[in-house]
Structure formats: structure tokens, C-alpha cells
Length: 158
Image (cartoon, rainbow, N blue to C red; front, side, top):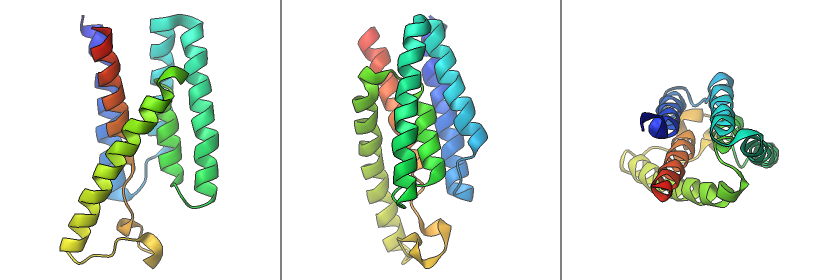
């Protein structure tokens, strides 16, 4: 019974860690992205064998490729692309769209909250001024979307 909640607990821990590091340093470190991905792939193998592992690895590879293209064009930060890859490794391709929608929804909520906070404090909203702390810490939305997706999957499995 307790093992059923291990995936969401581990993703929650990754979310909190990434959020704190992203807000504090504006970085989501490679080690966190890697540990998150490896834990997701391991959990997939434990729960579904080689077939689940393959589907989750494929999802992560697709997300990494797309994330690096978005990073190349300045749409997404490199740490954000790698953290999204790490959380994608927890879900097979059938959950890819749900993960994308959850992260996008959390990103929209974060954007409105961040924008409102920055405007109230009369702070810049863009990182174009050179200060990375003016940028949106999107690791928060990535982790929150992953936890929402996992919670939904656990709820559907009950």
C-alpha cells in the first residue's frame, strides 16, 4: 500500500528541490535532473518491466530533443529542458499529453502569480536586462505539473 505512494512522494521531493534551487539560484542542476530521470525509469521498470521502461525512455528522449531545440532558440532554459526530461521519464508516451497540459496549466498559474508579484513590487518581468533573477523560475511549474499528473494517474488506478 505504501509503495503505491512512493512515486508521488519522490516526484514531490524533486519538485520541492527544483523549485527551491530555481528560485534561489535560477538553476536546476544536472544532478537533480539525472536523479529524477533515473528514479522514474527505475520505477517504470519495477512497475511495468522492460516495456514500461522503453516507453518512458522514449518519452524522455523526445522531450529532451524538443527541449534542446527550445533552449537553442531561447524559449526555454537548459535546466528547465533537462528537468522536464527528468519528469517525463516517469511517464510513458500515453501520458505525454497529460503531462504537457499539466505543466502548461501550472506554468500559466505561475506566470500570472509571478507577473502580479513583480508588478506590485515594481520589478522588471523580463530577463533581457541581464539579471537572471528577473526571469520566471519555470522549474516550479514543471515539478507541479509532474506531481499533478502522477496524482491523476494514482487516482485513476484506485
